[in-house]
Amino acid sequence: MVDDKECMYVFDRGYLDYERFDRMTDAGYFFLSRLRKNATVRVLEDFKRPKASAVLSDQMVVIGTPQNRAENLFRLLKVEDSKGNVLHLITNRFDLSAEEISEMYKARWAIELFFKWMKQHLRIKQFYGQSEWAIQNQVFIALIVFCLHVLTQIETESQRKILQISRYLRAALWKSPHLWRRKIQGRAGP
Image 1 (spheres, rainbow, N blue to C red):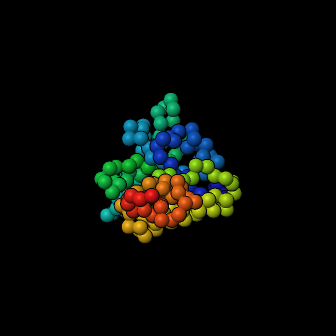
Image 2 (image 1 turned 180 degrees about the vertical axis):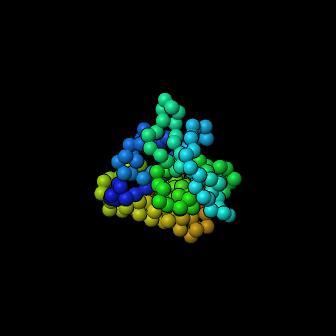
Image 3 (image 1 turned 90 degrees about the horizontal axis):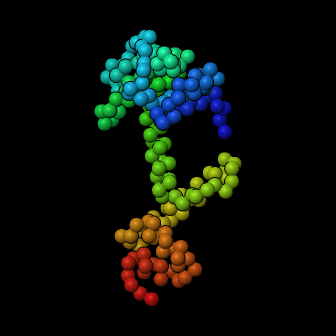
């Protein structure tokens, strides 16, 4: 959907691979990743860092040991997150400011949280189409169903969880609304 060379790949340290970083850089792709704290780094140049910023350092580095070293030069940012932890971010982008790179990584977490929420609340087991529109439609339908369950919970003033409401509605789909309304509200009845 997007030209690969115009986008920025942002991933976590689980995908840490120096050869991959070199291949991506040589092919003209941009990336941003977290580097392990114990990674071997040789600093070539320190860049001026902005004052009153979460960026602790901004450096041009070579990563890896002499036996397993990346061929390209990279940019290492040490950034403090909202909890005070120091993150080591590695990228091949030298044209962006340190704050812009830091914000890109923060945005990655917002996306991660959104997908985590989707997995927990929307019932999408598989996609039935492969086009962009098919996937968007299926996600929108799942969001609409979730919103209808929330509205049902609000309307019935139920203390039950959305998952329980969803199960009651599925079980009593073709039955009288009075039956599932009683179930959702927690009242006994026929």
